[in-house]
Image (spheres, rainbow over the protein chains, first blue to last red):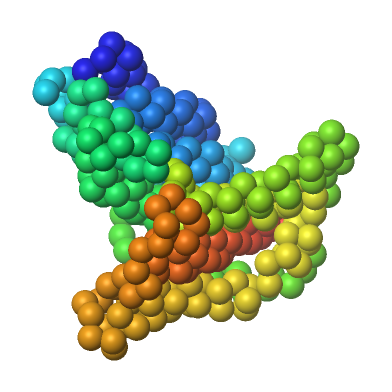
Length: 80
Length: 114
Length: 166
């Protein structure tokens, strides 16, 4: 266990908590992408480049797109 | 082997579970579910990790070099793919429910109507 | 596929033109420049997936992202033209079917399912994997098509909600 791994693991715990505590879905989507970035760094430090790449691809392309479309759709016809 | 990854994974799991249980918005709930699922990535990678080992890419290294376990990495990869599919499916269900029930709050959906 | 089935019934009247103009020149230029780069990166990830980090899944998603960039930077209509849905659905079937066919080919020849029929080649080269490259490309096609299909369904939903608001 090298220090960088410890730091990133703790950071992952903190950012994961922040993702859950962000109640507004739009803010949560942003925090969630930070969480994805931390996860990518953690995977790299854990010597898993394959996993890091797929998390990177998923975190930058698939998740935000799908999330943002859902958020926008819900907001359009909703209260605002 | 340190216990820290498992502690963090447990923390992430329960934080995600807390989010799922207390969520007032299905989109928020879905993201909390991915946080829950991400705890499994940490567990799997921590199981496969060995101190001082390199990544499991075998081109250009000698046979005796220590590498981390590639099998759990393949499992983690599958896990990530599954999590995307779960998110897509849940969000499409959410959007469908919004067009029908006009709400994304789990508590306001009183009844199921076909 | 489940997503496609779920979202399909809500949009029967989709033939109207969606609102799709991008007025910002910088966004447009950068986006158009990034499209070939992204597609190339996706192809590279898929092609070298079994030698370097990467693979069918990652390459497939990046390929789909190239198409999405086309929409983000250009016009939704260009995106629609570049991804005819019948063809994409066909490609998804071909990808999934190809994987099974490679597996069954091994079964037919008397080996276990997905047994590597072609055998290993030179270590570290593109042809070193035997039938693994075939499986890899099948997965890449499948994932790219499935992602395009997924994004398409979500975008249609979004465009529909835009229209009903105006």
